[in-house]
Length: 60
Image 1 (cartoon, rainbow, N blue to C red):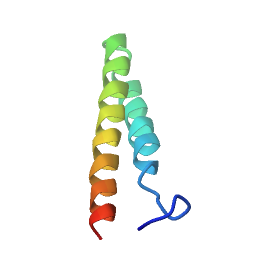
Image 2 (image 1 turned 135 degrees about the vertical axis):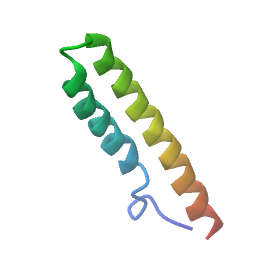
Image 3 (image 1 turned 30 degrees about the vertical axis):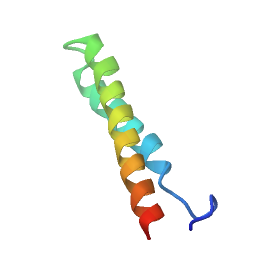
């Protein structure tokens, strides 16, 4: 069982969100809604990765 201090799976949410915002800035001139879309995609990807890492940690 992992304790909260050693569990870094929640870092995936913030990391993917920052990646999504960064990618969105490349497309903001062409379509401002692309910034919002890539931010949401980054958030969703981070949540999926966190769920996968947490389930793997619980099995071990």
